[in-house]
Image 1 (tube, helix red, strand yellow):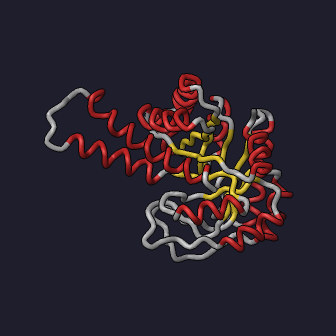
Image 2 (image 1 turned 180 degrees about the vertical axis):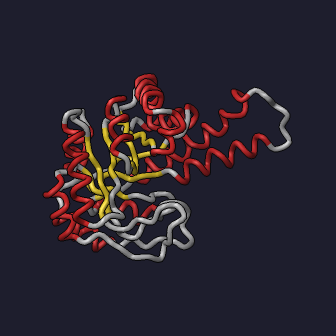
Length: 273
């Protein structure tokens, strides 16, 4: 089943997919152990930084072969790419889905750049995600407002032909300084206007009830990255404190387990929506 087909199925089911970022073999393993234990599908995501770290082909091979190993239904997605070259490399490597993020450009420029990626991905049968509005990235202000306009969401989707749209409704990347308050009425309005699968970025730290209401109102993909890195590193740092062990194969497993437990918690939020 392609990711496009899965989004259509999720629309009928009024459910969503967890999209978890990975950074190395250990985080891939932690995410997929959770998906296997829960018997739930998953999207594995790699950021451009991860592609620079691992390379597109290594990232793709690691993710796709690991999904086979764990018997998990899943898809491989490139998250927040700004470079056509990176997108091309990932499509060539076998990614199922790519995101072009031109959200900081003007509306017309965003349409132009995104349309180019949709045309490129069409030859691969790949899913394309884009972003409209302001979702604060790491280091950017959480105070700035630039929420997605429902009418523009419809126009953007129609002009570009995207399959998925990341919406700005009050979430942000990284840790929240205060509890987020998603504009769920805006989400409902966007849903009425837009045919693309709606995506919630900055899923780390959003209260469970808001995520579940978001799913009921149309969110079909929920991104989680910051909490995964935090769980992995907190566990690893704890293992390394006053520890003279030099065999990395003995200090990584607890961190892998921490990631797995977190992903299972996130999947339970979706199951109980």
